[in-house]
Length: 79
Image (cartoon, rainbow, N blue to C red; front, side, top):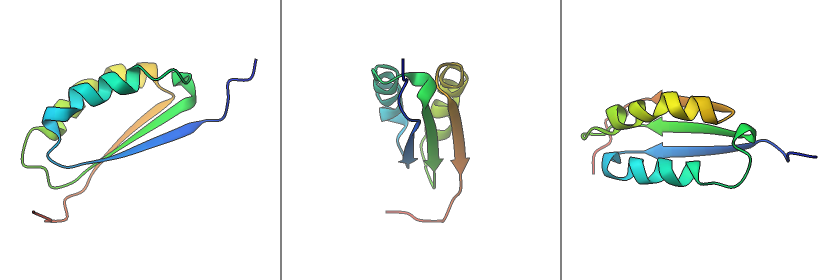
């Protein structure tokens, strides 16, 4: 049968370390075929452990989803 079109989920992140585990669990619970989903994570200017927490999930996500990209660029933006 038809698997459906490929889908990109692009997620910006900043100081998101506390939310990443739950967010990844929700991505993994999606019922759309994971081999049709590309994930993009964009991180900027975090002062917590966002990068390290997300990096710990990347190998498993890359095995499960069509593709997974991670980009970090700091703009010096602080709230």
